[in-house]
Length: 222
Image (cartoon, rainbow, N blue to C red; front, side, top):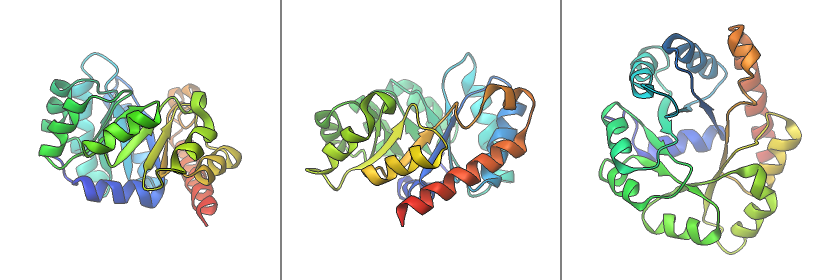
């Protein structure tokens, strides 16, 4: 069962403005990445459903976070069908993210008061997602749509909460551009976790990079 409900998760995501996106088949590596992000100020973390037995790794990091990172909301990403969403809810997913919008997933998540953030690529898709209770929608892939898409959508629909994912970089220029365009938060993967740093187990780098990115977001919001 989810430790944090929809409102709590959205508050965590909104207050920090960033959700790291990560997958690794090694449980111990995943745990260390979660802890490094937590130490860097992150309070919502998306583990992606991208490899065989990903659910086994996910179950372990949820248990780990409950003890070592008590304020961290662990969510699951890359979810495209309701059956998979239901499985991860049983494993303690605090939020569910997908590359596409599937209204059947919304039903499963709403029943448990768990946030569902679907990937949307048009104003209409965002509107349909909002109709079924998706408070936060994902603009994906962000580097394809760009900041003008966000600005254009927010003009007639200013109540929208958008998370941009895909091509987001932990630089002052990139993060400032997205925040000024009007996004609620950003999702960031490979740019936050370079393969060489993960391989070298340089967790101090990850922590520092999270702190740096969160600082740029906070500055851009002023």
